[in-house]
Image (cartoon, rainbow, N blue to C red; front, side, top):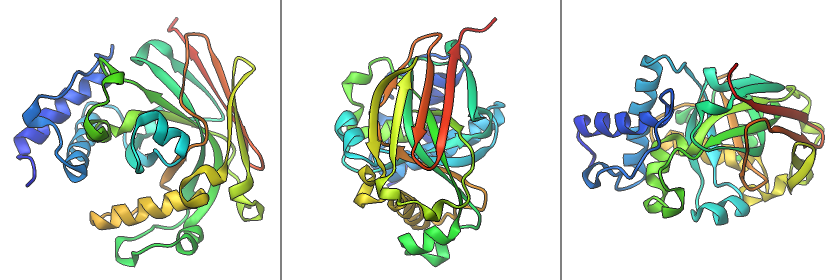
Length: 273
């Protein structure tokens, strides 16, 4: 049983407060608005995306996938991947400058990202690692920007469904240089390293992502989208999941990631002038 349209709108409006300016931390949704299962959560997410675009937050250009590695599943207490939207207004290239005060509690993750050259269509499901690899035009080293927009993150919103409705902490990304000859790389073996202000804070391997290969996260996303009747269009950006546990940052911090064979990306967090 799905939530009524009016309840979807109300739930999305409450979640949208976390991305107002200045942002307002989100408490637990009222019981009757809490998503009862993952499809409820995705229905709220779709309404939230429309509301954010109408409010000037930009256009959807991609998907972030969370909880694709054991380190992140343990950190969040969720045993399966989750997806959220990426808006063009939140994406930076190579060296991204962010207004620290525009977030509630901002964090960073070390990611491998892809850009699709051709669509992954629902009609072609089930997708496999072979089929999705043909659609990938480029890989990037990336930093995902996440925001703990909640009054009390430690309360573990039930089963993470409200987190999914709210784009699963997604708040932006910095993409490094696009690498089109990525097929030369042994993706399970590539290592990512993240530093904050020059100090290493974590490292991990491509094989840490679900089923031992980064592109398995894309397989999961394409098949999950197909289950809901959606395509992943050409030029779509997908963040495949963090190989390093989320790190929270302070005003003035500079974050760098380096991924073997893919290069690096940087994010800087400053107060407004």
